[in-house]
Length: 50
Image (cartoon, rainbow, N blue to C red; front, side, top):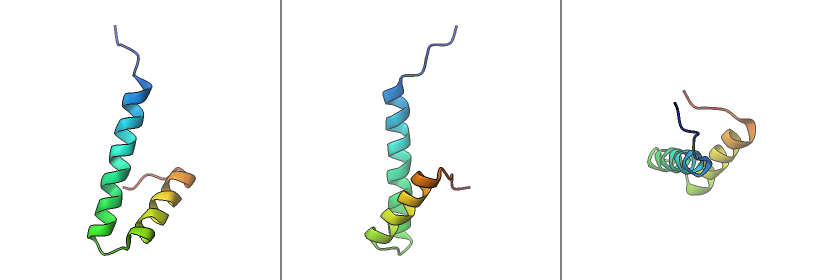
């Protein structure tokens, strides 16, 4: 039988993914402020990068 997913594990995984995405935007040349705005737009709009 499958164990229920730990909500904190899900949040940790999501936060890690967003941080990695943020770092990727900065590495690509976005300023930290621009990268944060993109991450914010993704979070607010519920979009997932492809």
